[in-house]
Length: 431
Image 1 (tube, rainbow, N blue to C red):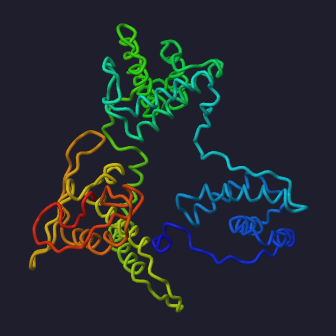
Image 2 (image 1 turned 60 degrees about the vertical axis):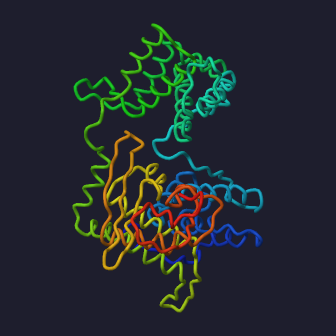
Image 3 (image 1 turned 45 degrees about the vertical axis):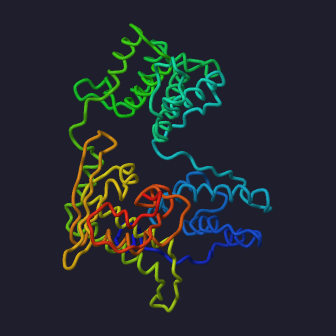
């Protein structure tokens, strides 16, 4: 489908390896081993006229770019890492296999910060801080004035990343990693030292002062992590006030315009063909979901059996895209939609078409946003509820879409002609 939309390159039928050197290596692969990813990589090298002895990590990076252009998907990097693992395994199994050890490097722009194991003195404090983030007021001691609501898993992950970067900044500016602790980050000079180093790395140039770097969301994340640490270590008085003034310097001004990346994406919609493809994508996905649910026979006479789980995921994706087209939501807000809270449906009565009312308090700024889905958009949503959402049993249900729990949500199909948050379509304990 993505190839039909022009998003991915056309698929090419895999040709047998004709290069003699590569063909000999393919023939030598163990019979009980099924390295289909490695075979594809070897075919790519043969097609690019790269000899087995000339394979390097640069070749692996080129193969990664080729796979991204031709296949896409979120698992491309893990697939290519599996290629490297299989290649290195063959070095120990097959005589004459090239002696090159392959390893896929980090994505472009990603920093390889030291792991927490590099800071043995800080590890107990790190564990205590992360546990403190996860606990709620009921878990805190009676005299603990730092009691707070438990942080979300996303926030804990962000704070963990921030700690690694802050400690890494100290290590890069002359501090011995084995002696560093989280308490060192509460020392004003050391906190400013790591923040300055990261601002040079993450900041953007000041158009008025070329030698000065302006704060960015990356430095703001580090400043927020330090502020959270100050609460954990109960920093008070003038030390706390001085810390606050210093952290404010590393937070950018409130953004009033969209980012350049988002602007470029929106500019693509100026093409009427691209806009039409996007607007028709939900209906196209729903059509594909119906075929997956019922099974179908291709033009070549190949029978495709029903796939209820895949069809439910495809239909949920169609509805999610339709909602985003009407009311752009962050992925966390979309995942938390509930039929008995944020979504309500006017059921079909006679000739009256269905309508879907969507009211969401955005997680980012706590502002209420709402809209109505009418016409084909509402019909698409109701079709998902009736034909796909009840189809697959699960052990737990929390949201309207499978992205909430990683599974499809079941609801019994019961007719209703009243406008309500669809309690009749939900089982006890269901979202």
